[in-house]
Figure 1 (cartoon, helix red, strand yellow):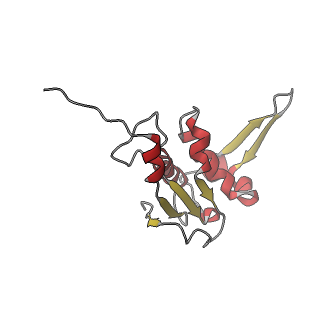
Figure 2 (cartoon, one colour):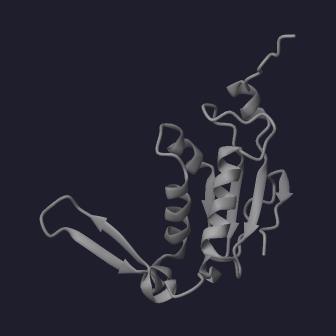
Length: 148
């Protein structure tokens, strides 16, 4: 008896995309970002294939109310380098949350996705807002409760 493997087509993946609305209030940064990465990749779907971009749209609100566990509030730093000599900069987590809390979640999700050609396309389907947002009410909503 032969078994057939069916692969999802990119056209059907485009048609079956859904919108997921997540509230980041009192959510742990790492656990929320893994849930978002799974939704963006489409791993929660039955017809997932790693080479096909079959993920959904994700809208995250209230990122200014994210929390971290342990001593990360004091110990976590964000590092970047310009490429020039002495071009290294580190920003503490606490200051980054004060300046732009959406960047914290965006970097966490970006680093959880595979570094390939699909990553930029997947990140375009991610919308992050610091406060409450009602803009995407017209989209077909699938209320996704983040695990607490």
